[in-house]
Image 1 (cartoon, rainbow, N blue to C red):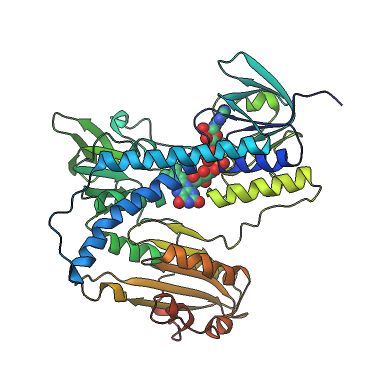
Image 2 (cartoon, helix red, strand yellow):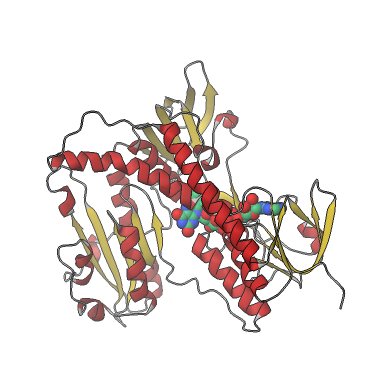
Length: 460
Ligand SMILES: Cc1cc2nc3c(=O)[nH]c(=O)nc-3n(C[C@H](O)[C@H](O)[C@H](O)COP(=O)(O)OP(=O)(O)OC[C@H]3O[C@@H](n4cnc5c(N)ncnc54)[C@H](O)[C@@H]3O)c2cc1C
């Protein structure tokens, strides 16, 4: 066998790469991981974690409104953007340090720099005059924000990457996009008092989610002051002395201080040298992998967002674990993408698991039973707020298994994690109902839904 510098070389120290590198090194293998930016990857540095801090910072304004309803009074509530950014960045640096330390403790060598493939066993560290060889290579380079580069004035628009470091909080922002990142940032900025417009070219936000969720959330975020413009997109962005003028397809001209494009993400494969190593891409530009994450090259695997299967941190981590079991433990495993719970940290947030009603109608041969409730949460009783919670259960009519749960409302991301256990376990509606309620909570509705929705009223 050829003598390589490493048993495994991982490209990218994000959610997937770090986990795979650590597990493999703990097995006594010689492992290195290259990182061109900061250890922790998108999730820790410019994704889930800083985003959640921003959501929590912005939710305070809503909490203050509720507090007033409960009899609290305040002099003047003020928000200090630079102070928040500093605190956030200290915490992000701390977390990144923990990731790096854990790599070291496991015996992984951390290589700072951009790694590119020279052939199927050779990796070059760009700008460092260093080339190493490895028996096996794992590509975990993640994704990058995409924006329409041919749109006139697009150079004035930021993406989520810059939104984490705006030098000052704008007075007005326009966010283009209808996916979860667009909706989350719209909630963040609106909560922080920024005049916020969300523009999306499709008929409704959150494509791919249950239609009731989409309609409900669009209404609720408008109640929080976000102006939502659907079925419309940019024609150009013009920089003027007073701001950025958004010229929209419908003839509207909207001036804002910041324009943010959250119009999707693409696998980060640019100039990685994939062809020289025999690693093929699929039609969507993601690395082609088999169910065990193996690429078209015999000794190269790929996990996480760069494969564009299900772009979530816990999924990248599970793919890493499956890779390690398959390749180093002689225990072939692939991740099961069914019933993966997910949350949108909009305001109010969304938690979903399993099939949408439309998907269930397509896949359940004998149809579906749908249970829906909409109500005002007890928390808002004294506030005059007309915000409402949506809860929806989708049940396979034949087996009576609950195949989909969809919640829009406070704490839904926390609720859905637990509901996902029941959905993954394939429990029936009767088993859900046999579970005694916790009172008074919102979640108790999930085990007390009695009325089936008639098909005519169902949005699907
Ligand atoms: C704004 C935002 C919010 C998100 N919120 C959530 C959420 O709430 N929940 C959730 O589950 N997911 C969320 N995600 C998605 C989540 O961050 C990703 O699914 C996850 O980070 C993917 O992990 P990964 O290991 O595939 O790649 P990444 O975490 O992106 O890591 C890839 C790493 O590789 C490095 N790299 C790339 N190319 C090279 C190279 N050639 N050489 C050296 N290093 C390289 C990069 O610098 C990066 O550090 C969010 C994403 C974004 C952008």
